[in-house]
Amino acid sequence: MTHRGHNLTSKPDVNECLERIYAWYEQKIIDRPPVRFHHHNIEYERHRTVSGPWATAEERWLDVDFQIKTFVDSLENTEFKGETFPVYWPNISAVAYNLFLGQLAVFDDVTAWTHPCIDDLDNLPEIKVQKDNRFLRAVDEMTDKALEIADGEFLVGYTDMYAGIDCTAGLRDMGRMCMDILMSPDKLKALIEQVWTEYLEIYDHFDRKLKAAGQLSVTWMNLPSPEKFNVLACDFATLISPEHFDEFCLPIIRKEAECFDCNVFHLDGPGVGKNIDSVLTLPNLKAVQWVQGYGDDSPIMQWLPLIEKIQSAGKSVIVDLKLDEIDEFISRTDPTGIMLWIPAIPEDQDTVLQRVKKW
Image (cartoon, one colour):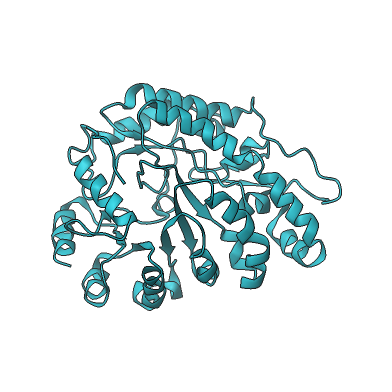
């Protein structure tokens, strides 16, 4: 991967860090593996009730000026060390594409969830993106306004869009989808295809905006790419067998993966991880983000065989690592293709980077 130079006042070493990321996509190391100071789902661990002029949480989420100002204000007190990049992405939760299709949602301080709206596979409602939809308009406006002020300050990315299996599950209901697999498999497959139909058109709409402004491809995952980048996911897979995953999920995920030059699969826990052999066959797959979860699924060391399998397949892998796991993890693993996400406080970050550089 190659790229033009970028200058960001909030991250003076941006080009050096981009080179580490681009090497990582190819399972190469320049001077050390990349490190992002963050851990997955941190936003759900922080209660952040915000008072203001809004009557509902949804109004706050769609307040364009507030959302952008909140992000810009955060830059003043943040030093982006390692491969942690200042990225503004228009966040209206992980159900953004469902909202674009007109599905209603309930918002709270940190997320949103939908109520299933497809009750009968024999009598489907129209499933189309609503171009005048208030959520799509808000993301458009957030993107445009961010681009107006981003040059030389921060990166602007895509909203969080999933239009395959997880979007279908939100529309239909996960329990019903499990029954559909057994009772109405062909009708379910037709619904999955219908939900996907306009996804690429919407992605390309935002991609053109960002590329015209000289932006890289970047999402909530904070991984910039000069190529057309996407995050693949299928959290629904935790409820079904690998055989059903291959029959119902893998075809639409493969179709999505073929549309992008650079894919990272969000492998959310052991329930999805059981499908790793199939995931590793996806086209244009550069990396897997392994999210081991909490409780019995932590600590990380029990997942070394999975991490090594991903490496052996020639793919890179993102690993969440606690500070007290670093030494043991480094002593027992090959750094090739590994990126670490570490929840280190600013005072510890330089020490972490020096430790990883000796790996």
